[in-house]
Amino acid sequence: MLHYATEILPSLLSGAWMTVRIFFWTLIAAIPLGILVSLGLTANFKPLRWLLKFYVWLMRGTPLLLQLIFVFYGLPIIGVIFQRYDAALFAFILNYTAYFAEIFRGGFQAIPNGQYESARVLRLTRSQTLLRIVIPQVVKIVVPSIGNEVINLIKDSSLVYVIGLGDLLRAGNVATARDVTLLPLVLVGIIYLLMTAVATFILRRVEQHYRSWR
Amino acid sequence: MLTLKNIKKQFDGRTILDNLNLEVPDGQILAIVGPSGAGKTTLLRCISGLETVDSGEFILDGQPYDPANNRDNDKVIGVVFQDFQLFPNLTVKDNITLAPQLVLKQSKADAEARGQALIDQLNLSGKEDLYPYQLSGGQKQRVAIVRALAMNPKILCYDEPTSALDPDLRQTVEQIILGLKQNQMTQIVVTHDMTFAENIADQILRVEPIKA
Ligand SMILES: Nc1ncnc2c1ncn2[C@@H]1O[C@H](COP(=O)(O)OP(=O)(O)O)[C@@H](O)[C@H]1O
Ligand SMILES: [Mg+2]
Image (cartoon, rainbow over all chains, first blue to last red; front, side, top):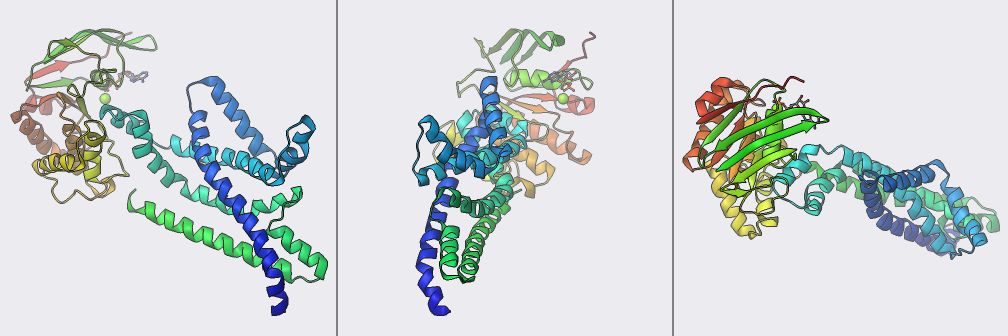
């Protein structure tokens, strides 16, 4: 059994690598984009606000699975063609940006107007105020909710299965179907658990970092 | 010297300040008193540029002055808010030295040296590395005062400086304000506490709510 496990491990790990790549790039893009969209959601310019509200509503109100299928199988019908991997990233970033934007919007709303006003009478610029005063406070507020989404993202990444990308779940499923054994799926479960454990650990550290002030 | 001429301010068509005039000579203390809702905070917010006025003039040291849009760092009007509004994510030292570094372009060492002098002057020595949540109300207020002073303001404004504190701290606040007067700081103090106003002020301005 150990022999079999070492035999299929390389294919599982290469699947896991795909999962990690999607996870990583989605976070790297969707967190800053989420901050920008959340700023847009509270902007004074109404058309922008409506547009972004509509986008968030659409992304949160439909399944990520549908969005994936739409991007990869749907868009080519109107001539927009993505590679599998690009399609997956595009759909994930679009979807997670919307969730992050909602979380950040709540965080920004929790900052009292007095913080902006005291920065203003100290003559800080708008971007200095955001970067030095507001965003650190927002981040502290949103870390737990972002953490939930990060864990979700690891698991959601298995949805790329449906557009034929070779991720961790697919690697396990292929081995199980071929060799008629449960072991690959058990290993897949263990690898997901390891990944969520690492993410949880890092998130705890971030939370601790922000615990020095209230 | 700051002069306000015929200042008028409305909110949604309701007049809050009507043809208000005042003059604060350099180094003096003006107390603004009046009942709740009279427009004291609004007046302070107009002077510090947080609200725009509907008409009237501001004159600072003989020059027309636009509080809401002035960018001249030699003409800062400092504000100590009623609830202080310290930055919770920054230590006392960083609360105080952030704006001098970013806005006045002081070096870190320079800003810290100047900040330290003010910290010592206002009895905050030893608190430099604490965060605002670790301070008492009186200490927070003094940090807010130091933070405003570190910008070398022309005028320092306070909104109800006694309201968020224990009553026995009133005298300490009086001493701080009078101490700054010794250093020629021009100050405007909004309060509804008449005794407090009489103890500190060179001049008292009464504002009354305007009947609709
Ligand atoms: N942003 C605002 N919009 C509309 N009305 C306001 C606003 N700020 C203050 N007011 C009104 O202006 C009046 C004066 O308020 P304020 O200046 O806070 O009085 P005070 O500080 O003397 O108690 C009050 O009736 C208040 O409701
Ligand atoms: Mg008031």
